[in-house]
Amino acid sequence: MKKELLFMGPPASGKGTQTHRLAEETGLPHVDTGSLLRAAIKNKTEAGMIVKALIDKGQLAPIEIVARIIKERLMEEDCQNGFILDGFPRSLEQALALDEIKKEIDKDVDVDFKVINFEIPEDVLLERIVNRVSCPACGQIYNKKFTPPQKDGICDKCSTELTQRKDDTEEVAKTRFATYHKETEPLINFYEKRNELVALDAQGTSDEIYERIKEII
Ligand SMILES: [Zn+2]
Image 1 (cartoon, rainbow, N blue to C red):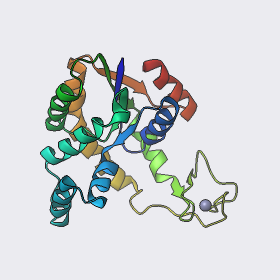
Image 2 (image 1 turned 135 degrees about the vertical axis):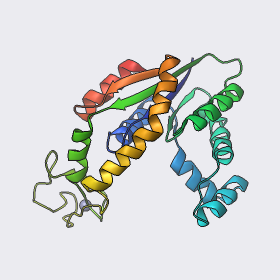
Image 3 (image 1 turned 90 degrees about the vertical axis):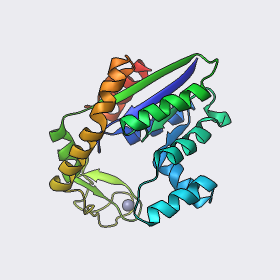
Protein backbone atom coordinates (compact mmCIF):
# COMPACT_ATOMS: atom_id res chain seq x y z
CA MET A 1 0.00 0.00 0.00
CA LYS A 2 1.18 3.49 -0.86
CA LYS A 3 2.09 5.38 2.30
CA GLU A 4 1.43 9.10 2.31
CA LEU A 5 2.41 10.94 5.47
CA LEU A 6 1.82 14.57 6.17
CA PHE A 7 3.80 16.06 9.07
CA MET A 8 2.49 19.07 10.94
CA GLY A 9 4.08 20.76 13.93
CA PRO A 10 4.84 24.15 15.45
CA PRO A 11 8.29 25.77 15.32
CA ALA A 12 10.90 23.88 17.41
CA SER A 13 8.63 20.83 17.76
CA GLY A 14 11.37 18.52 16.46
CA LYS A 15 9.46 17.79 13.27
CA GLY A 16 12.48 18.38 11.05
CA THR A 17 14.72 15.95 12.92
CA GLN A 18 12.08 13.22 12.93
CA THR A 19 11.22 13.69 9.28
CA HIS A 20 14.85 13.33 8.23
CA ARG A 21 15.34 10.19 10.27
CA LEU A 22 12.12 8.59 9.06
CA ALA A 23 12.93 9.38 5.44
CA GLU A 24 16.37 7.90 5.82
CA GLU A 25 15.19 4.72 7.51
CA THR A 26 12.08 4.01 5.44
CA GLY A 27 13.36 5.23 2.09
CA LEU A 28 10.25 7.36 1.66
CA PRO A 29 11.25 10.65 0.06
CA HIS A 30 10.98 13.74 2.24
CA VAL A 31 9.10 16.29 0.18
CA ASP A 32 9.83 19.62 1.80
CA THR A 33 7.94 22.47 0.18
CA GLY A 34 10.42 25.20 1.04
CA SER A 35 13.32 23.29 -0.53
CA LEU A 36 11.18 22.42 -3.57
CA LEU A 37 10.41 26.06 -4.26
CA ARG A 38 14.04 27.06 -3.80
CA ALA A 39 15.11 24.29 -6.19
CA ALA A 40 12.53 25.33 -8.79
CA ILE A 41 13.90 28.87 -8.65
CA LYS A 42 17.51 27.71 -8.77
CA ASN A 43 16.84 25.39 -11.73
CA LYS A 44 14.91 28.15 -13.48
CA THR A 45 11.90 25.98 -14.27
CA GLU A 46 8.88 27.76 -15.73
CA ALA A 47 7.04 27.62 -12.41
CA GLY A 48 10.20 28.61 -10.57
CA MET A 49 10.63 31.74 -12.65
CA ILE A 50 7.04 32.81 -11.95
CA VAL A 51 7.54 32.27 -8.23
CA LYS A 52 10.81 34.19 -8.26
CA ALA A 53 9.28 37.20 -10.01
CA LEU A 54 6.56 37.35 -7.36
CA ILE A 55 8.88 36.88 -4.40
CA ASP A 56 11.17 39.60 -5.78
CA LYS A 57 8.16 41.91 -5.69
CA GLY A 58 7.52 40.90 -2.09
CA GLN A 59 4.47 38.79 -2.91
CA LEU A 60 3.63 35.25 -1.95
CA ALA A 61 3.71 32.45 -4.49
CA PRO A 62 0.15 31.76 -5.66
CA ILE A 63 -1.36 28.47 -4.64
CA GLU A 64 -1.77 27.20 -8.23
CA ILE A 65 1.97 27.45 -8.84
CA VAL A 66 2.96 25.93 -5.52
CA ALA A 67 0.47 23.11 -6.09
CA ARG A 68 1.88 22.51 -9.55
CA ILE A 69 5.44 22.26 -8.26
CA ILE A 70 4.35 19.83 -5.55
CA LYS A 71 2.29 17.73 -7.93
CA GLU A 72 5.21 17.41 -10.34
CA ARG A 73 7.43 16.30 -7.48
CA LEU A 74 4.89 13.76 -6.18
CA MET A 75 4.55 12.27 -9.65
CA GLU A 76 8.24 11.40 -9.80
CA GLU A 77 9.33 7.79 -9.71
CA ASP A 78 10.65 7.77 -6.14
CA CYS A 79 7.26 8.88 -4.78
CA GLN A 80 5.32 5.97 -6.25
CA ASN A 81 5.41 3.98 -2.99
CA GLY A 82 4.69 6.99 -0.87
CA PHE A 83 6.24 10.14 0.56
CA ILE A 84 6.52 12.36 3.62
CA LEU A 85 5.08 15.77 2.91
CA ASP A 86 6.34 18.67 4.99
CA GLY A 87 5.37 22.36 4.88
CA PHE A 88 2.30 21.87 2.74
CA PRO A 89 -0.64 22.31 3.16
CA ARG A 90 -0.48 25.34 5.44
CA SER A 91 -4.04 26.53 4.93
CA LEU A 92 -7.45 25.12 4.18
CA GLU A 93 -7.17 26.35 0.62
CA GLN A 94 -3.92 24.41 0.25
CA ALA A 95 -5.50 21.31 1.78
CA LEU A 96 -8.17 21.40 -0.90
CA ALA A 97 -5.46 21.80 -3.52
CA LEU A 98 -3.75 18.73 -2.08
CA ASP A 99 -7.02 16.81 -2.41
CA GLU A 100 -7.05 17.68 -6.10
CA ILE A 101 -3.43 16.60 -6.50
CA LYS A 102 -4.17 13.31 -4.75
CA LYS A 103 -7.09 12.62 -7.07
CA GLU A 104 -4.64 12.67 -9.96
CA ILE A 105 -1.65 10.92 -8.45
CA ASP A 106 -3.58 8.25 -6.54
CA LYS A 107 -5.73 6.86 -9.33
CA ASP A 108 -6.25 3.12 -8.89
CA VAL A 109 -3.85 2.88 -5.94
CA ASP A 110 -4.55 1.86 -2.36
CA VAL A 111 -3.37 4.69 -0.20
CA ASP A 112 -2.69 4.94 3.51
CA PHE A 113 -2.86 8.67 4.17
CA LYS A 114 -2.10 10.04 7.63
CA VAL A 115 -1.63 13.52 9.02
CA ILE A 116 0.72 13.36 11.99
CA ASN A 117 0.29 16.32 14.27
CA PHE A 118 3.16 17.08 16.67
CA GLU A 119 1.55 18.08 19.96
CA ILE A 120 3.69 19.84 22.51
CA PRO A 121 2.93 22.57 25.06
CA GLU A 122 3.98 26.05 24.09
CA ASP A 123 6.00 26.70 27.25
CA VAL A 124 8.14 23.65 26.47
CA LEU A 125 8.78 24.97 22.96
CA LEU A 126 9.60 28.41 24.31
CA GLU A 127 12.23 26.99 26.63
CA ARG A 128 13.79 25.17 23.71
CA ILE A 129 13.86 28.27 21.58
CA VAL A 130 15.21 30.83 24.03
CA ASN A 131 17.97 28.45 25.15
CA ARG A 132 18.99 27.45 21.65
CA VAL A 133 22.51 28.30 20.53
CA SER A 134 24.34 27.09 17.47
CA CYS A 135 27.78 26.95 15.97
CA PRO A 136 28.23 29.41 13.10
CA ALA A 137 31.03 27.23 11.69
CA CYS A 138 29.68 23.67 11.68
CA GLY A 139 25.96 24.20 12.32
CA GLN A 140 25.79 22.06 15.46
CA ILE A 141 22.84 23.05 17.64
CA TYR A 142 22.92 23.09 21.46
CA ASN A 143 20.46 23.95 24.17
CA LYS A 144 21.98 25.82 27.10
CA LYS A 145 19.65 24.03 29.47
CA PHE A 146 19.06 20.57 28.03
CA THR A 147 22.00 19.76 25.77
CA PRO A 148 24.77 22.22 26.71
CA PRO A 149 28.25 22.08 25.18
CA GLN A 150 31.00 20.75 27.44
CA LYS A 151 32.62 24.17 27.64
CA ASP A 152 30.22 27.06 28.13
CA GLY A 153 29.59 28.93 24.87
CA ILE A 154 32.07 26.86 22.81
CA CYS A 155 31.29 24.23 20.15
CA ASP A 156 32.32 20.68 21.16
CA LYS A 157 33.05 19.73 17.59
CA CYS A 158 35.11 22.62 16.31
CA SER A 159 35.75 24.97 19.28
CA THR A 160 34.04 27.90 17.61
CA GLU A 161 32.16 30.40 19.76
CA LEU A 162 28.43 29.64 19.78
CA THR A 163 25.89 32.21 18.79
CA GLN A 164 22.17 32.69 19.28
CA ARG A 165 19.84 33.47 16.39
CA LYS A 166 18.48 37.00 16.58
CA ASP A 167 14.90 35.79 16.19
CA ASP A 168 15.16 33.18 18.94
CA THR A 169 13.52 35.45 21.49
CA GLU A 170 10.38 34.89 23.48
CA GLU A 171 8.62 37.73 21.69
CA VAL A 172 9.38 36.51 18.17
CA ALA A 173 8.59 32.93 19.13
CA LYS A 174 5.19 33.89 20.50
CA THR A 175 4.33 35.69 17.28
CA ARG A 176 5.37 32.62 15.29
CA PHE A 177 3.21 30.36 17.48
CA ALA A 178 0.21 32.66 17.03
CA THR A 179 0.64 32.60 13.25
CA TYR A 180 1.07 28.85 13.28
CA HIS A 181 -2.09 28.28 15.30
CA LYS A 182 -4.14 30.64 13.20
CA GLU A 183 -3.00 28.90 10.01
CA THR A 184 -3.19 25.31 11.13
CA GLU A 185 -6.22 25.14 13.40
CA PRO A 186 -8.65 24.99 10.45
CA LEU A 187 -6.44 22.28 8.92
CA ILE A 188 -6.45 20.22 12.08
CA ASN A 189 -10.25 20.34 12.18
CA PHE A 190 -10.43 19.50 8.49
CA TYR A 191 -8.34 16.34 8.80
CA GLU A 192 -9.83 15.39 12.15
CA LYS A 193 -13.32 15.30 10.68
CA ARG A 194 -12.09 12.91 8.02
CA ASN A 195 -10.37 10.70 10.60
CA GLU A 196 -7.02 11.28 8.97
CA LEU A 197 -5.41 13.15 11.85
CA VAL A 198 -3.18 11.34 14.32
CA ALA A 199 -2.00 13.19 17.42
CA LEU A 200 1.64 12.63 18.29
CA ASP A 201 2.89 13.33 21.80
CA ALA A 202 6.05 15.20 20.82
CA GLN A 203 7.48 15.48 24.33
CA GLY A 204 10.37 13.26 25.33
CA THR A 205 13.68 12.25 23.85
CA SER A 206 14.18 12.15 20.12
CA ASP A 207 14.30 8.32 20.22
CA GLU A 208 11.07 8.08 22.21
CA ILE A 209 9.26 10.32 19.74
CA TYR A 210 10.65 8.37 16.81
CA GLU A 211 9.35 5.10 18.29
CA ARG A 212 5.89 6.66 18.65
CA ILE A 213 5.95 7.74 15.03
CA LYS A 214 6.88 4.24 13.92
CA GLU A 215 3.95 2.83 15.90
CA ILE A 216 1.58 5.27 14.24
CA ILE A 217 2.68 4.60 10.71
ZN1 LIG B 1 31.13 23.85 15.51
